[in-house]
Amino acid sequence: MYKGIAGSEGIGIGKVVIIEEKEINIETKKIEDTDAELNRLQEGIEKFVEATNAMADRMDETVGKKDADILRGHIQMLQDPMIEEQISALIVAEKVSAEVAVDQVLEQTAEMFAQIPDELLQQRATDFRDIKTRMLKLLLGIEDIDISQVPKDTVLVAKDLTPSMTAGINPDNIAGIITELGGRTSHSAILARAMEIPAVLSIENVCSLVSNGDEVIVDGTSGEIILKPDEATIEEYKVKIDELRKEKELLVKYAGKPSVTKDGVKVELVCNIGKPEDAKKAVECDGEGIGLFRTEFLFMDRDSIPTEEEQFEAYKSVAEKMNGKPVIIRTLDIGGDKEIPYLGLDKEENPFLGFRAIRFCLQRDDIYKVQLRALLRASAFGKIKIMVPLVTCIEELRSVKALVKDIMKDLDSENIKYNKNIEIGVMMETPAACMIADLLAKEAAFFSIGTNDLTGYTMAVDRGNAKVAYLYSTYQPAVLRAIKKIIECGKKEGIMVGMCGEAAADAKLVPLLLAFGLDEFSVSATSVLKTRKIISECDVNECRELADKVMQCSTQEEVLALLDK
Image 1 (cartoon, rainbow, N blue to C red):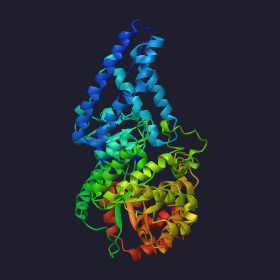
Image 2 (cartoon, helix red, strand yellow):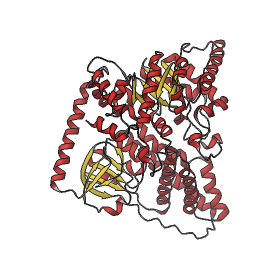
Image 3 (cartoon, rainbow, N blue to C red):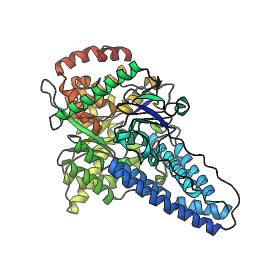
């Protein structure tokens, strides 16, 4: 058995097909006719665009527009004037072939993104390397891999599955995916989840551990794979697959039902989204609103700040899709660890403790006011609420409220409609916010607990550091006490308290969160019905008895032992 990262839930049993890249050999001889080489480059780009559009069109049908747009984004990345100019300039100045220039410029660009200490931006490195490889194949006449032809019950094994590789996947034929690289936010994981294919990522040297035709079990829920399992193990996992299938079928009965406990306590079950298009999935999966719209994604993968009109249309579209249901929109959480080249942010020694989120926004109110104005305008079209990230002191919340008040005056003078009673809340994700939760609750309209950062900051741990990753756990007594205190302070002042971190969908933690009095659970769209089922099976009085015992625990192990019971 080998342990990796659980990238996409489910269990698959099948035979290995190793996806190997054909070796690319590039000659480095000098070129005399640079004009001819520039023409070769343009022909290669035209072929790339044509092939990519064709793959994206196929993905529109098999996976959906959102994931097909990942590939369409590759066209924009390659045709970026700066990238094309650098490649052409290298051909002319150094008299090198188109493939040498493509290799050097795109690899340098990929390396630049790979150095950024943020998983989402590091993914751009994978994108640029995918573009580079495909361009080199086109220029050298190497045929690409065709995954669409693999037989039924195939487990794909690769160093990394790029978007172009996965474009041809027929989900009916793929039992699982295993890679050597990638994390939960990598395209491999995103696409696997979209196609509901079990996936385990980041298993070191897995391509060397298996051979084509080997039988393998992929457990995308636990993040484990079993190579060459015996018959007894296969039968055991077939039973588990059948149980998962039955469980999924049973979840359908929770669609359209209220999110209410066994003893009648009603809560809100809403969704986390990153792009306006994600709101459609939230509606399809029966989400009761949006608990977190991460607006920073509107600012990424482009070379300039989105205009007020672009932002307004994005926020308005989500509000309209949710048709009167609450939509909590987090203002720009960027800076430090999430670099955007065109913002010109300085490199920092410790970006997680640096110039990011609300700290950046309040100092760059030229950017922030545009976003707040767009949000206010969009509030006329639905139940939009504004959430402020990374708050550590009361002055930050007051400053945002003052900016909003000023913008409201401007909108009034222009006769532009907006919700005059728009709620402004705080994302509770720092120990400082926890310590002054009683003060914040007097001035915030709501709280939403971001357990991902709250866990990291409370435990003083970098979750990307393998040596201390064992400390990164919401089950730690310190983190549970922080969550409990935040909820208690919010409830005392009569404001709504939600949770938008990963813990909101954790089956073991749901009973505790209900006992603490959490009002709103914000989860991924695909987790809505599963979480509703868990909530419906809970009795709050019993949950409180459990919580009393858990809060007496001294260690994470003791907490888990109680929750596992």
